[in-house]
Length: 384
Image 1 (cartoon, rainbow, N blue to C red):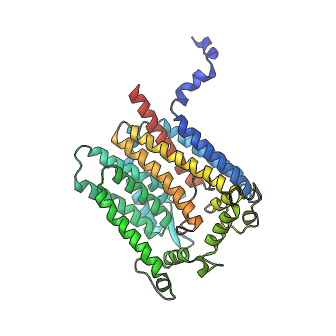
Image 2: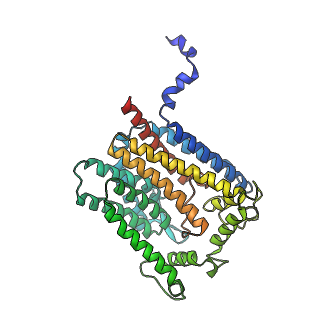
Image 3: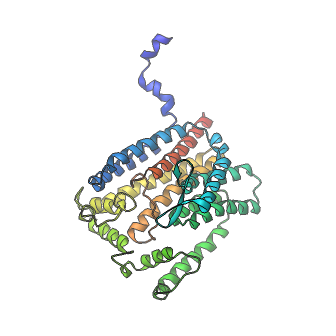
């Protein structure tokens, strides 16, 4: 009866809502958010309102995660084609009359200024997961070719902007869906071998390839310079190699236990560029050391493994492919960011999930987590 509602314990009232959340996944994300707030306070305390803005972005992402978690995977599948179509149309609009900033044409004004490539980070795996779900049980080689074309269109448009970092993330998300859908290892090994050979040749012939006046076909000048700077940051220590050198110095200065919270000299004397965004991992490593880095890597590994576990237990092919792709997205974000700060990958402007400052990236993370939560909940509903 109505007068009895007040007697229902709060826990009972919240149970239907909380049941939508995957406990282990929520706990892992909570740990990562705490680490993010911890280092953001240190690295950004003298940088305006970065800490409070970061906390606000996390709350917004959490709200988005909560809303998306309530949507069944079947409904998510229904928006795959429209979202992909709109995303590609906006990328074409960027190519035709986009807004150019700092030499890159990545934005378009549709009443508000947006960056369509961000949409494709989730629209791409959604589209491919929808494609393979529709062909479940009757997959042919042609279906994988079509999937490759669907992936190549947005990746090519994003690279044209140019935006190598986002293109890599969209490519990783799309390839993961194609692989999880059943692509043969025989098709994976050749490009991996060619990649290894290419890297070896780059290292061996680096002095000739990076000599003054040598141009690489198919690459913009800045992309060629990034690769050459990666191979030898001391080539331009006060210019293009500055970021990598200072990041490596900060990581090395942290040692085993770190310089101490809020005591990082590289961080607080402002030697680390972008210390609250792309290079926040350098600030984290300097202050918390190897022990802190291992905790952070352990948290990311737990997040990825939990996502893959949700994928394995998902009730439909679409859900399995999406959960697997989201897990790969988290891996790609973390691996590329840590790799570029550590000097083993080119600097491409990829944030570290939950740690780096950035509203758009946090929104994407919230959407991705909401999708994982939705898939985990659909598994429980099927089992019950």
